Image (cartoon, rainbow, N blue to C red; front, side):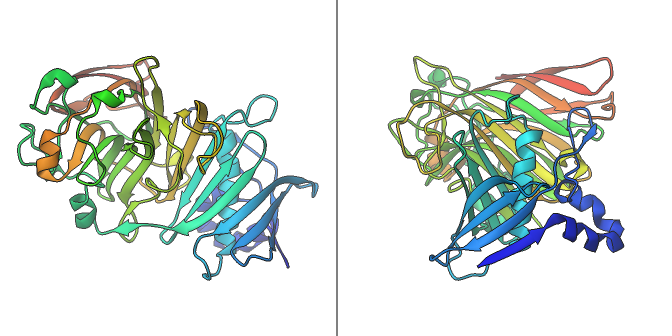
Length: 410
C-alpha cells in the first residue's frame, strides 16, 4: 500500500496560519534554512515522500523524491512501537530535517556524497526518530519511545545537574568533581564553569581530549557515571548536552552522545543509551589520542530547535555494531523542538554523578580546548565567570561576537 505526502501541499495549508510559519522554516517545501555562523539564507530542493508498507507491519519503505519526481533516497523505517500507528506527518518532518541537517552541518562533500557515517535524531514529546545514513547509501529510520522523567527524578538519577548537588570537597555529594590527573589520589577536584552576562549567545563549541581507559576509575554506569557536557540555565529549564562515558565494550570503552534537558512535559534523556545502538565514540589509548568535537545550539538558526552535534572517531561504521571494528568518522546530530529565546548562563562541565559512596571513590580525567561561545549579535562586555574547582580566562574578538575561553582545572 502506498501513501503519498507532498510538502508543497502541506505548505498551502499553512498559508492561513502565517503566525506560526517561523516554526516550519526548515521543514517547508522550499527547504529554507540558515547557515548558523553567518545567518545567510539558502534554499534546498523540494522533497516529496512516499511511504510503502511491507509484509512486516512494523517495517516500512520510505522513498524521498526530488521536485522532478526522481528518487533521491530510499529509507527503511522500523517502528519500535510495535502495533502503535505511525504519525506520518511527524515521520516525514523528521526525515526532511535529517536531510537538511546533512547539508547544514557540512556532512556532504563537494562531490555531493556522504563522507562518513551520519546519525540524526529528532526528539519529540512522545517519540524519537533516529536516522542513520552510511557512505554506501544504506539508510534507516528507527521510531522509538522518548524517555521522560520529572526534573527531580532526572536529578536523582544523575541525568541532569542541579546546583545543590555540588560538593567541591568530594565528600557526600551525588554529583562530584573531577581530579586533574589520576595521580591526584582520593581528593576529587574538578571543573564546572558558568558564563553570565553574555547577552544572547547562540551556540557553544569545544574540543574534548578524551581520557584513556586507565585514566577512568570506578565508573560502572550503575552507581557512578561520567559526563562531559555543555548547556545552559534559563527560565525555560536546565540542559546538560554532550558526552557520557560508555561501557558497551568494557575492553575498549568510549562515549555516547548525551542529550538531557527540560522539555515540554518533563526532563528528556533521549537515546543516550540507545541512539547510537551498539556503536560509540572512541576514547583515547596510550597510542592514539582521540578528540570529540561538540557544538550546542540553544535555538538553531532561529528555527525553534535545540540542536547538538558531536563528531569524532567511532568504533563501528553503523549503529548495529557490525562489521570490522576500527576507527570510523561519525557525525551525530540531536534535535528537540523547543524555543529557548534566552538563557541566564551557559556552562561547561566535567563531572561524575551517582551514588555518593561510588562518586567519592571514582576518578576521571579529560581536557577541553577551543571552548568558544558564539553569537550573531555582539556579546556583552561585562562577562562574568563562575568557577567550581577551576580557573579560566577569556578573549573577545574585535566584533564582540566570538568568546574564546581557556579553562584550567585546579
